[in-house]
Amino acid sequence: MVKYSFDKSKIKVLLLEGIHENAVQCFRENGYSDIECLNGALSGPELEKKLHGTHIVGIRSRTELRKEMLIRSPKLLAIGCFSIGTNQVDTLDAKLLGIPVFNAPFSNTRSVAELVIAECIMLMRGIPEKSALAQKKIWMKSLNNSVEVRGKNLGIIGYGHIGSQVSILAESMGMNIYYYDIEKKLNLGNARPVNSLNELLKISDTVTIHVPSTELTRNMISRDQIALMKKGACLINASRGDIVDYDAVAEALRSKHLAGIAADVFPEEPASNNEPFVNELQNFNNVILTPHIAGSTLEAQANIGLEVAEKLVKYSDTGSTLGAVNFVQISLQPNTSKQRFLHTHKNVPGVLRELNDYFSSKGINISAEFLQTDPDIGYVILETESELDYSVLQDLKNISHTIRARILF
Image (cartoon, rainbow, N blue to C red; front, side):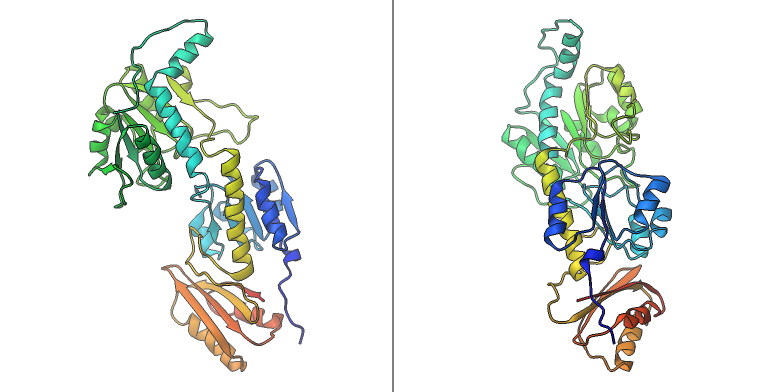
């Protein structure tokens, strides 16, 4: 019998879109040597070719991993989104293929929050318009529509990691903080929740948005919502491009109902710096347009590189899915003395019994077993003290409703 071993040198890691060197260092320090790094995003046949032999892939926001691409990537074990959002991946389809998706929900929180506060001050002082005119040789020294943020109302839509950080920074500057979230959240400082989005819009001098893109949030800020905002209010969107109806925003800027807007995300964004960027908001002086860089600071990218890489390494080494956005959560310590089996299957009755019956029929004692399920899948980790060969893995894959099976040591 030839003992099966987990050889990290055979795990292919592909990192796209200039992911920080911290990620590479993390993989290397943990024994992974086959690492390919590319600065740009990939798509179509080029992406498919690269993924064909890849076990772990890391992407940022411009590379999309959709169902058909995932199906054509048979060796893919895990996906790392080196970002907060995971909209660029069909996460449900990945789960049904046994592929956990990891992200970095915390690492760029401070960077985004700082930019939002800076934009809030700039908009409420009318700086974008004055700057744009000054560059056109027009001297507009005026205090019209220029106010301090102290004592003004900041309305935060979405009181999660970023929204709450914005809250803390804004309160330290003397702002009154109100927030709306569909889930009950713990108030930080003197922040106060409101009962509805409409209520928040009516009382806020500046509104900032920090929600994910879902069926509930797409175009959640459109004509009707903007009409509820104070005349002369400002709007900031550093969340997702499809949350705000920018055509409606343009109308509100023309009518001077809104005093200004800052937008970092857009429904359609260039795939690279070599492609042109076109948006209707470019016709206005009183806007701040940034190229999806709210979380793009050196500190944030370094933190993200390490956070996501650590999760990917832990999953590959131990089977731990802690932190996956689309998978049931199991977290175990590294396996030092036992043989570990990872088995993902459709969540139907009888699969766990078949697994246990298989080991029992071979006279193999199961020393530990961990199972988590959701409506779609079951994920079980089994440990034995036996030294089993590759044929066992093939047998596990042949069990009914198996999605994916691996052996670890």
